[in-house]
Image 1 (cartoon, rainbow, N blue to C red):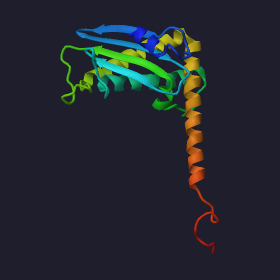
Image 2 (image 1 turned 135 degrees about the vertical axis):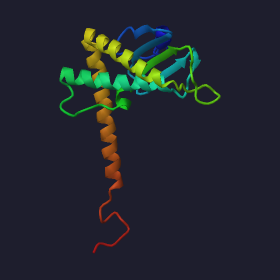
Image 3 (image 1 turned 45 degrees about the vertical axis):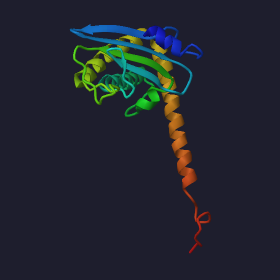
Image 4 (image 1 turned 180 degrees about the horizontal axis):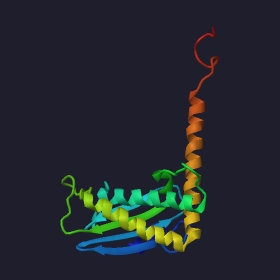
Length: 183
């Protein structure tokens, strides 16, 4: 799946050269994750359960997204970029990401007949804890990568906030702009 992520980013400038990749076994379960950031603004995350594309995601994808957001926020506080109660949202953290999350389990429970969403709730906590451990270790070993990811997330957060303020200012109308006569 690391090659799949590299292929997703083949025409883009990446923040780091090789994708972050790991493959862990827990009894009969296997968790495989590959992540690489690029300079785009789109989130490009694929999830699989027993090699079936789970287009709607499911428990394993939720666990991945939760741990990714938590680890990037923790890294930001550790580095000193995020102060006090500052946080970047999951949407901001995933901006420009290309990732593949693949799990293999003996008794998958899919929601619906199309098998596009994994329902095994235990995979959420398992993927969350494994990704947290591995990604935290990766970011500690590669502080420049952590800083680049955090900078990208902070830029996305500032852009989202600026867009919100611009929307609000356009929606706010003064007394002369409204159709009413002033008192």
